[in-house]
Amino acid sequence: MPPLPRRRLRLTAPGGAATFLTLPRRWLWLAALAGAAACLALLTLAHPLPAAALAGVVAGALGTLAAARRTLLDRQAQTVRLTAQLQSRADQVSALGHELKTPLSTIKAAADMLQEGTLTGRQADFLRIIDLQCAQVIHLCESLLIHARLESGLFEPAFEQADLSRLTREVVAAMRPLCAQNDQRITLDTPQVTPEVRADPRLLQAAVTNLLANASRFTTVGGRIAVRVAVIDTGIALYVTDDGAGMTREQRRALFRPFATSRPLGDGTGLGLVLTKTIIELHGGAIMVDTAAMKGTTILVTVPR
Image 1 (tube, rainbow, N blue to C red):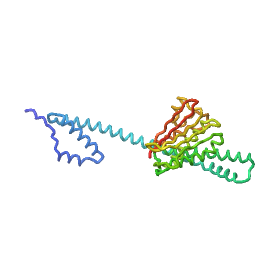
Image 2: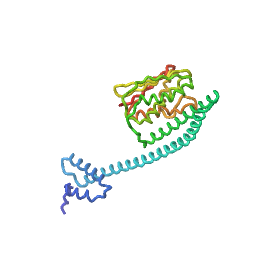
Image 3: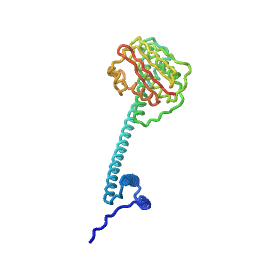
Image 4: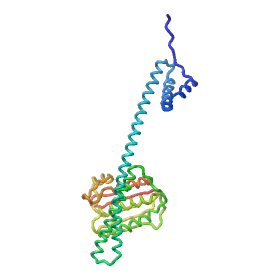
């Protein structure tokens, strides 16, 4: 018996379309990619491809695509798990922040009411200390809440047109009592009117407050903090300069690591500048630090218009 002629597989548009349409929907994308790979292989050959060889090409392409699909599904599942974990942690921190903030707000309100009455000098001093310390811890709780929400990746900022000069003046006014407690002098140089920036006012206020609180912590008793707002080509610049001890190279490297601080335990969390950097970058801005040991520190923040 004479040998059978070698069969060759010829691709036709109607046949390919019919095969494509009869596949289960979940395999259509794999079939389409496999078909493209097979067609590419055919175009690179000078002669029609034998059926067995073509079957090998298609099988290899399908195997590669199936492996890629498994990897993609695994990564999607991992992303879902990670998102759930981040959301759970954000919810826990948020709940803790609210639990701490509520009684502190009550204590602060009571202290404010007591200051309206007739007090001795010593009583007034004690109430002022209570008021300032409550305000600091309330600000810390708010920073933790914002940090948890931003870290989860599920927080949506409420952008609107905001006046950075006015916002900075308000923050400086609120910080003066804290600076006065440490006999620190805070100066402000800002234009009365500056172009507005697109920002979430609450987040931007938290960022500026963190900058000034950080400067106060690192400035010695009797020191000076200078705050300046300026209009630049790309937007608005905020400079916060203190005449404190400055930072070493090692301290500067750890400056934007969460909860890294060179201060003694219980004196600052190391979260403030990390949160500030996150907020400023969320607004499309940048933060830069100019510091040296025993020469003070200047932090520059820029926010685009």
